[in-house]
Length: 415
Ligand SMILES: [Zn+2]
Image (cartoon, rainbow, N blue to C red; front, top):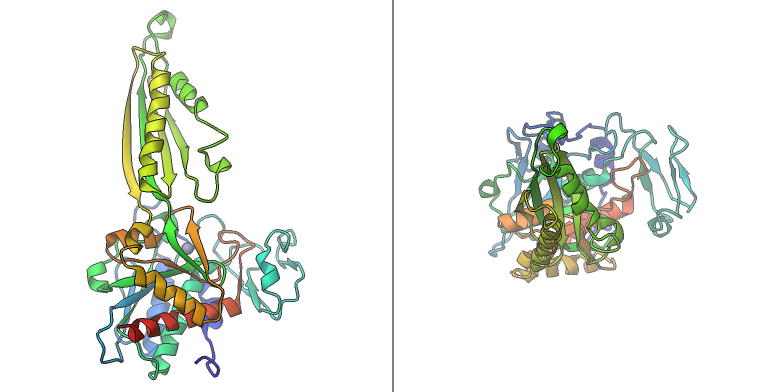
């Protein structure tokens, strides 16, 4: 199906990464940075050039577009989604993408900072890319494959579907979002307007990987109220909330239940912020587990730690507040098994080895899934994301394009 197709994903990608779209965690505007719209506008223009007539950007920088159905069958509406912003962790200004053709397995020294060296010892995936064409940044910025790879792949898939009307598919929706990296990617999304039944984010790593599981996540805030008096006359009266907070933190387990000592399917209790004075201290925690009931167990454990410490301070008091953050998308995806199954089949048809993965974090896909758009995450080829050493294989990107097209086709076939 793709033998004579001239893929455009990498050429698009090389252009998109040069547009600075860094989002800003401290901003209260939507989008958090106006410059993200610079790429969204380009995408709307290019979609129109490809023939996607209704492509538009809204005031918040979201791009919505439709590839009309070309079949008589009733097929669920499928959306492909990627985010335009790049992470605040490394500069996204003045990105200079470099194409390294026919990679031979050597270390790659990035030209503008010779200390930035891509080594197979650190990135074993490079071994699999021998013979591929690899794109890197120049050493002073991130590359932005997270998630401009996904953006470019969806754009190329749109180009393929429109120029290959013999490939039958239902209505395909395209959604590009801002602010994913600062946790606000779905804040202003209009799912009514999108009107899709199922979605796929393209925001994963290694070719063939498919993520259908994320953490479930709560936040816990503990507020400790001490007893305050003039320090010169405090004997027998003062209770210092800072010292209580220190006791609580030092009572937390270290060898287990911590991010720094867990991996795989293990969750954790993680203090992220302490704020306070002798009178009153606030401690913020994030609680993570793949099983939602596991969150409650961890919260009970934490409450127990706090109560034990507080027994030593009978005149002090505390509040313990749990706030839901997001939930494991598998809870939703298990109710719509064809979404993941068709993606698995599409990966096989693209000639790739399927690799199921769990995300030790949340994604826009997990939020979208719970907002009514069941949405696993497909590979986009991104490697070493959020760093100056970011890299991506052109051939992996093309495989992602093929996978998108196969998914569109499979939904039509099975409807
Ligand atoms: Zn991403």
